[in-house]
Image (cartoon, rainbow, N blue to C red; front, side, top):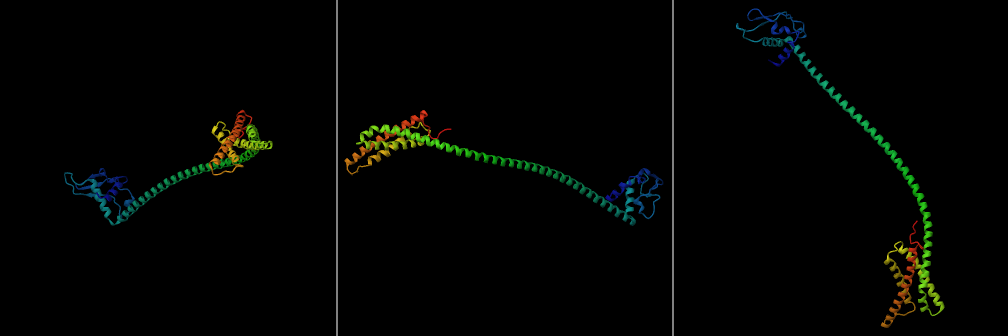
Amino acid sequence: MPPLTSAILRPLRSPPYSFLCPKNLTSAKPLHFHCNTTPRSDPIFSASTSPLPSLRCRCAAKSDGTGPSAEDMVSDMVEKLLRREENKELLDGLEEASARVERAREALADIERQEADALRAKEYVRQLQFREAVIAESQRELLEARTKVEEAQQSLSANMVENYNKVVSSEAIDRHKERLESGKAALVSSLAGSLASVPISLYQATSFPQLILHLVVISFSCALFGVTFRYTVRRDLDNFQLKTGTCAAFGFIKGLSAAEVGKTLELDTKSLTSFSIDGAVSVSENIFIFLTAAIALDFCFKMGILSPFPIRK
């Protein structure tokens, strides 16, 4: 059965065209069938030129009842009706109606897609609004944090300025104390060195003024040694090498300079030997003097009479 015929027969099987069903057909004469039901008015048949009061179907049926079925006969009849010129407009209208239905379905599908897109867009807008709110909240918190940081920086700057002023004032006080302690160290070192040099000065001096001069030079040298010793050793009072090295450095410098004064060096064995002996004796004497001053300073540091550098608050 052709597709177009099937498409037309499908609505014909439903009311109001149920009169075409085989149960409504009764046998009259052989090879003839009459319809018991008068056809109702329908748009499909309203386009035909003449009404169909009755329908007579002829077929080549045999006397034994074999032959085409009722559905086949109706199909043939519909095909004959469709071949008529007056039914072409009906077919064209049917095709246009089918096309309109397809267009309506496509439009409906487009509307559904647009609705789905609108829902997705609405959800996306909602997410954007939520993120915008989150960003605004983060910016507000960042602004508050920045304000707090600026306030903390201002407070810190004020505290730093105040602390700096306190440190400056305390440093001024500490410098005064340091100078005082250095003066005390110079006095102790000068007294200890002068007392240690008295026997040596009495041995070397030939007159009283020379003795006084020798003692004054030793006193000033030991005072300078006392200040240098305090700033050199600092609080490392148990460093034996540092303390003895300071004494040796001062002893060598003063001893060699004293041995060089007033003597002429000649390039002979006797002169070199005499100069070496005098230099060794002078260096030993000065090392002994400065070592005595160092012992006195170390004793005062450990006993708390003097404060090593720097002074602890």
